[in-house]
Image (cartoon, rainbow, N blue to C red; front, top):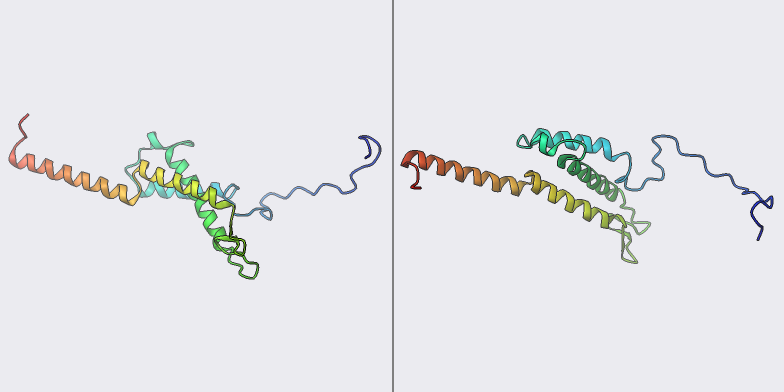
Length: 157
């Protein structure tokens, strides 16, 4: 084995750096530059669709809406990538990287984590359909109670 500095050089130069915007080495893209623009669009959509959200409390770069949008963007990118995996000639599909061996795509573990983050954020921000329905029922009950008190008089204290 030659010692360092013995004059033997690496005969193969290192590969050239990829040009900006190159995605040839990217797999699902959930940890790439593709996340930010999609997350920004999801964040705008979330603010527009949910006027009850408080920008002071949930806004900003580290706010709940931003974190939710990033996780949802990652989930969307992974699902799009998995949908493109249906290549039955190679034995791969949207679930299994190798059907014969029963091996699933490695991204599933991270996908599950990101989906749990989205679920928790939707509940916390009250943007999940079930949470919104519960809040709507509570609001309706409170309105009915207030209307009842107005018609019948205040309850005895």
